Amino acid sequence: MFKRKLEEELSKWKQMPGRKPLILRGARQVGKTSLIRQWASDNFPQCVEINLEKKDQYNVFNAASSVADFLKRVKLVMGQNIIESQTLLFIDEIQESKNVLELLRFFAEEKPGLHLITAGSLLEAKLGDNWTIPVGRVDYRYLYPLTFFEFLRAVGQLDLVQELQTVRWGETLTGAVLAQEWFKEYLTVGGMPEVVARWVPNKDYLAAQQVLTRLQTAYAEDIGRYAVGAERKYLELVIEIGPRLAGGLFNYHNFGESGYRSREIGEAVRKAEQVMLLRQIIAINSTVLPLARKYKRSKKLVWLDVGLVNQINNNYQELLTGGYKGKIMEQVVGQTLVAGSSSRPQDVYYWARNKDEGSAEVDYCVQLRNKLIAIEVKAGGIREMKSLFSLLKIDPQVVPIRVSWDQLQVERYRHDGLQYEVRSIPFYLLERWKELIV
Image (cartoon, rainbow, N blue to C red; front, side, top):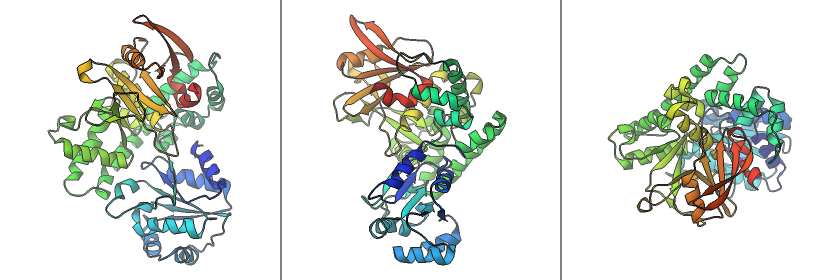
């Protein structure tokens, strides 16, 4: 089992006064169940695990009429007593039972001392249609594929992780070359836990690719669990074509040269986003807060995991060359930004000037408190950043970042007679972007 950063968040949740039941959200196969089991074994004398995908357990617990009835059924069927402060109650695949989901609010009211965690990969797809999460009665945490630092821990590069986590502006990073080499491995393998587990012992790329293929097939087969009727064919198209568009712009209309209409594809993309297979990056054209989203502009697509993107595109030999290089680096940067918050989804945008004002786009924008952070991705050695400088000319308060293979440093540029300072952050340090720019 890999050490995940989210374990620290779970430990904080465990100690919270007024703690509420926690719902762990994330796509299938990102390691939710394994994470909770491992964390529970390290933090509780006892863990009671209920899996509502198992028909016998579903039949028992879906029929519970109250919290007391639910806990009585745990004792009778599972043969375990729930002891507050000593027991973690873990309900997996909670999206299978509307009744159990609605019971969560009463756990919060009647058993505030109980540690209760639930998980559900397809929960978001079930919401609506009379399915609701008890607002204000639960907490959320989000789990994504392994980040680069988590990947390094999985391969045993603990000293390198320590250096990457502590290096500051102006300091020499002795492990820079090693970090670059491991980041290239991360680009190839990705961060899906089972894939990494198969790859780590012998760097078996073939075994990793076999798991990636199986995962992609499983995601396609899952469609029948949350889509009905004609919407299935649109979702099948999104899951087939989406990874090929990762890191680039797309439109709903004629998605993947399919000829399908915007409405149907738009609904399918949103459904795939609900189950966390992708993230749509929406355009903004202003830096005024709160940011105004331009929903009618083209969207940028970030897929769940860079390893899945490589496998579906079958472009391993051109991973760091040619046009694919730029797209895959935008994918991995977008993936890193999306995974930047475990307590709520990180809002990520790209900036695009109005069409009647000329052509200018900045790859990613994120809001940090009252500042807009603008991020340009440079896969090669090119330092030209006309779009970024156009944005800075409009609003000098924007914080500019260039993400590339170059070292951690503050760079100075002159453009159209103006001076700019740009923070240069290497790809392998990007997940520290928040603390580096404070």
